[in-house]
Amino acid sequence: MLGGGEWIYGRNPVEEALAAGRRTCTEVILPPNDLLDDQLQRIHDECASRHVMIRHMDRVQLDKLTHYGHHQGVALKTTGYPYVGFDEILREVHDNPDALVVVLDHLEDPQNVGAILRTACAAGVTGVVVAEDRACGVTPAVVRASAGGSEYLKVAHVVNLPRDIEDLKEAGLWFTGLDWGKDSKPYTEIDFKGPAGLVIGAEGSGISRLVREKCDFIAHLPMPGGFESLNAAVAASITLYEILRQRG
Image 1: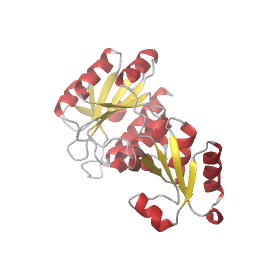
Image 2 (image 1 turned 45 degrees about the vertical axis):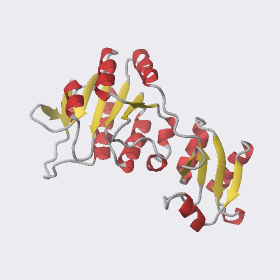
Image 3 (image 1 turned 90 degrees about the vertical axis):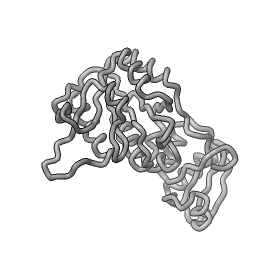
Image 4 (image 1 turned 60 degrees about the horizontal axis):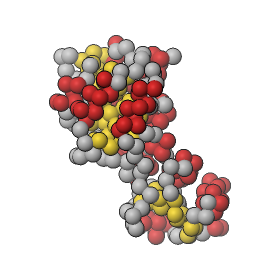
């Protein structure tokens, strides 16, 4: 963070942030002009057309600016992530008979959150709900891990996940939580056709008790190989594409 904004880094995240047009961009950092390849030149030209200030830095300087993130030679200074209000997602659910909402129950790993948002974008989810406390929001590292997919999603930051899940259920969603337990079924046995919500639990601890109690179904991914659990992002991706498969 610097001067009230944040630095998005990485070629695809920067291009997608510019293409999505949801943030105000004030400055871009690029390598010297003689080191610009086609993609970096596109970013340069797009920023020039928008009158975004262009500066040039060598890799060492950019490493420090991005706290040694995988920047690929480019960083874009923008306003913070454009979260939407929970009411906007609620309206989208009311208006869409095939609504699909993903709820992240206190995930803390930016790589996991970013990977889930990338798949959510690809799968065309209606919206994503993220807890505000003890959880990772949409940080520059998350944007990087999502390859910029987060820039196209409607993501709401909320204080009370159980209450908001209840509101979404009243709007017509049936919620499935990915977790183990005697009450869980293989994920392929859940009927995801129609309005649906998918809850992804925290790394290690899984879905919190109050959130789990709000789920209509609990689903697990069979693992005959002996592993106790899958990475949260992998499990979310597999289930989201099962939902797409069922919906044809």
